[in-house]
Amino acid sequence: MQSIIKPHIRMQTSDKVFIFSGRATADLARRVAEIYGIPLGNSTVFQYADGEFQPSFEETIRGGTVFIIQSTTPPTDNLFELLMMVDAAKRASAGKIVAVIPYYGFARQDRKDKPHVPIASRLIADMLVAAGVDRLITMDLHADQIQGFFNIPVDHLYGSSLFMPYIREKFDIEDVMFASPDMGGSKRAGMYAKTLNNSFVICYKHRNKPNEIGEMRLIGDVEGKHVILLDDLIDTGSTICKAAGIIKASGAKSVRAMITHPVLSGNAIEKIENSELEELVVSDTIPLKRESSKIRVLSCDWLFAEAIRRVTTFESLDNLYETTIHHKGIIHRIEH
Image 1 (cartoon, rainbow, N blue to C red):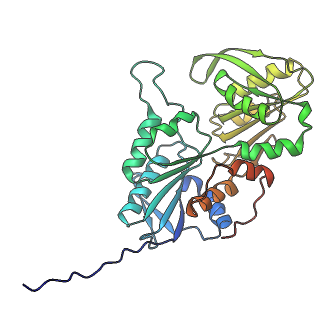
Image 2 (image 1 turned 90 degrees about the vertical axis):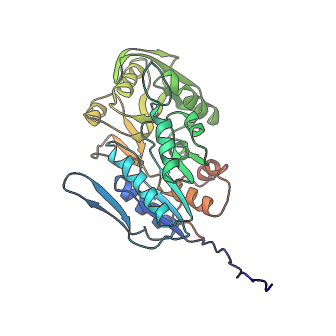
Image 3 (image 1 turned 30 degrees about the vertical axis):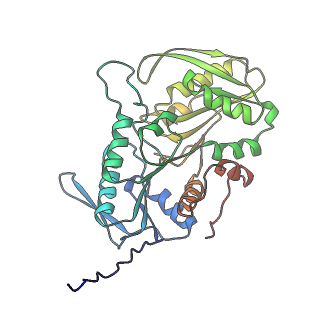
């Protein structure tokens, strides 16, 4: 019997990297791609008259590593658009799909705090993996345990990489004290205080219902200090503004807030402008609704660009924080 020789098929992989953006974070994505050193990928979103939309990649991504940058801010269209782009990339034979979610929405729903409610952050994790995400890069999750909702690698970046250099340059560290606006943020305030060899205070609050504060008290002495309130997100601004008023009335020289995600719903910006806060420092994981003389934005574009570079070159992200502190948060361009 004559043997049949099967042709040898050589599997080829591509080291081609693509960076695409959803509509919610387009400007940030453009700057990330520019710092990384490649043009932002060409994609479009066709909008139907009834509100239905359809994203489309306008270039070949077969075999490549595709990074899709999109913050899942309200409305839920932004989340669904990201899921649809992931599905489109998978069906276009992308080699690897990385979701870059600067602001991971619905993260406040990370547990059942009362009967008959969903764990929405877990639901979204399942949806992302089911859609085809191979890896997630995000920043300052509302709760660290959300990483455990994923069975894929999660690279969790920290807003302290932006804020620490700013604090070191602007203040005499000995005059600084950190504050948490609630008990849940005490770990974050403690980390800043330990790193800079400072102390911290806590504002204890009791809520009547979501976005409504019943009572707030200050635990600790702030007399004669420049106090910096720390949190992962600011929504209506009520908690931060009330905390700033209590801290200022307790003898602080000044009160500032450094918060990663500027959700700033409703009239939050007006509240900040009329509060005791001298300055609100935020990142650009979410575009500001409007500028304000009291709000300063520190861009996280270089941080995500460096994270993407390390993912593509299989380098560790463990020392990313120390690296950014050393460089004072300034990376003009990443050389490959």
